[in-house]
Picture 1: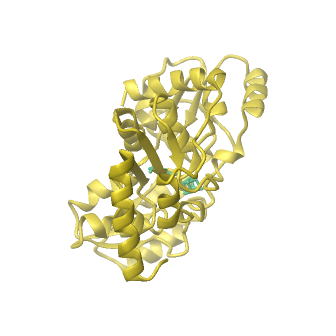
Picture 2: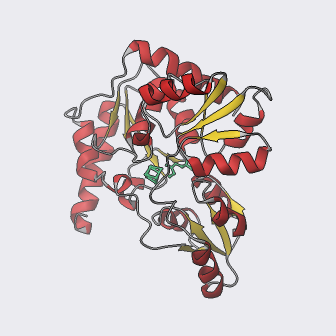
Picture 3: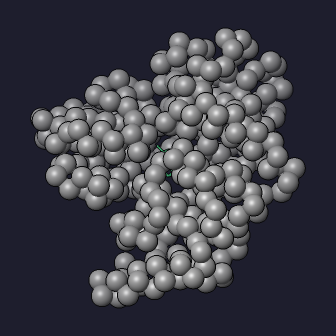
Length: 305
Ligand code: 13P
Ligand code: SF4
């Protein structure tokens, strides 16, 4: 991270460049605190897709991971979108390919495919509908009772949605390495260390962890909960507590594990944002044949959100 004087200068420079380029900066909740300072909108995957769809400026600079920038391009194809650090991917999204999904679908016969948005555009193009952590239950409830549902790629989210909807779900064996590491023991320890705190976990956590928590929420759901409580333990990426402190400085927020860091979400720096605004970062490109089908699955999700 740059020294604080240097950082302030960079932030001022980015704000000026942003105006000059008529750009909008969208940032995920897990981004570094200095990125919040230059963002026009900070949110979870669903809110970011909704915000991207509304953008009328000349350029969208995305601070997050690749699938999120692709979502922005899919919902607003007329605008150039750049991912500030093009190396930032999501490890879970890389646990599935379109080819593997096509093969599995053929093996299973008649199934409806629900794709978590943490997937490449090519995978969304093979899906019937998309979902995020904020609307996965609602999306599955909106589907007919037959045929069965193949839910990709997060097996933990799939199991939670199965529990909440009573629908039979065939999971893909993907997972998030940040959330899959949480244990029931982590929750037990957190309750001893912070007896007054509400324990809120992300639905990418293992089901047994979800079952001992007080609430389940998407990352922005966690921000909304923080408005109502004085003390929170969050079973998600540890940086999420920075986001809570920024919005509600009086809420005491503790990560369930301080080491739960998504490396890719921490890649984006202010220098990257500046470079993106200077036009030296390549635009997100999605081949038309993929985009058309992926847009359909995303649009279906947005219509019921
Ligand atoms: P949210 O949509 O809840 O922000 O989750 C995205 C994500 O990648 C969580 O790991
Ligand atoms: Fe992907 Fe997990 Fe990082 Fe979210 S926290 S972006 S699911 S690797």
